Amino acid sequence: MKKVFCLLCAVLWISFFGLAQAPGEPAEEGEIQPLEVKTFVGKVGLVYLGDSYEDELRRIEVVDEIGQRLSFNVEKDKTKITGKDGKKLSLGEINKEDKVIIEYTQDKKNRKAALSIKVSE
Image 1 (spheres, one colour):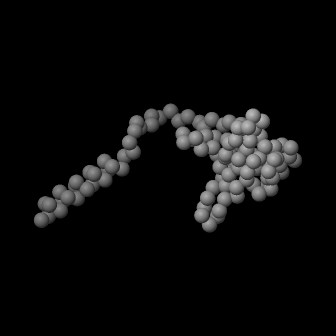
Image 2 (tube, rainbow, N blue to C red; image 1 turned 30 degrees about the vertical axis):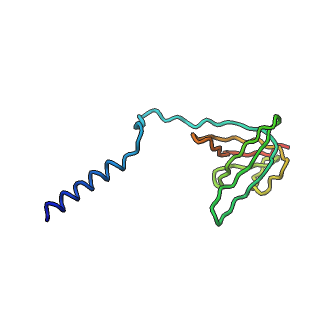
Image 3 (cartoon, one colour; image 1 turned 120 degrees about the vertical axis):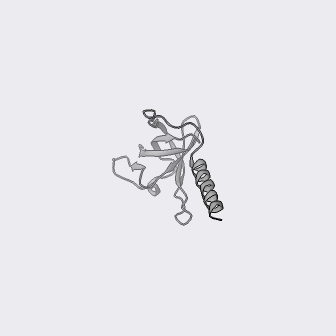
């Protein structure tokens, strides 16, 4: 009985570590690439303040001069929001049709995270 128990524990231990490794190629040292920061300029189409009860992300949609509409996630502690005078603003103080300059990053799933939002006019 002890042998069966030890054998079962060994199989579970090996399978645990075999499944715990993530699939894909391991990252080699020195290959960490910095995120590319992009800029988008346009007018605010929508400001969504999120739902703190549901823990939904806050976001802002901006439309540029040619009609391209992009949506950006706004993280409370990571996104710097400033007004025309350079003073700090909250997302709720940005109005529809305000002209904004957004610096953002984009992940592999094409999600855009705003790093900074500046109201320009």
